[in-house]
Picture 1: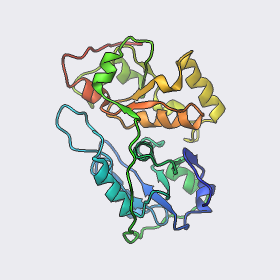
Picture 2 (picture 1 turned 90 degrees about the vertical axis):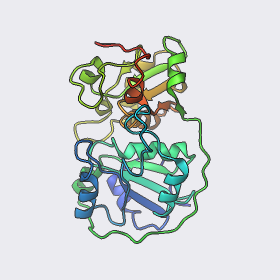
Picture 3 (picture 1 turned 120 degrees about the vertical axis):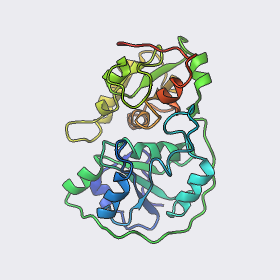
Length: 284
């Protein structure tokens, strides 16, 4: 079996292997303000051989009004969709976007939840690919066939878990939203502004350098270490607005060697849908 990547992969590393039949590249581009953007951008040009998965249609489940803006997808349905892209249990999957990994990391986390470790995010995304002098293709690949067997891991928690552990020393809740939304200001996506009491704010873009690539592992380890203090990475619960950008923080921690954190997938959009749940505003 060829080299395995489980967090990040550079553009030149991917370019050397992109035609390997055991490597599957997935385009995850999306725009929260324009849901049609990703598919249109993919049609205009994508990494050679890449398949496209849509955040709303493929990487999220059915919304009920109380389970958040991007509830987790049905695992069997997504596994079947991935199998149609050629993703079997031993495939190396590489996800990319053009937004600092905020959508690619969602697929990365979902596959990790499935028990799949050979999955990485293209560091720097589409921009890094182009900066490395690599070409795009506008041809959609033929559907492929594979078999995928699920082995779901305990990588997620629900609202009840979070509520039961509020104020307890065994949970470090990290919110990936922008600082203004965390404070309850400028909220345009959810009906209620604020954050879950006790949460710490770590804006997902703080994991990136000036070039849009992830910071060095040693830097990430130091920055997250300052947030964790004496806590274990396994006590960390990631959340954001809808369980998407929180995955960037989870990816950054794994890339830094801080393993075992979990995701509250419903995140703020689910939390604030129940008026009985407490809300905090202002800085942490």
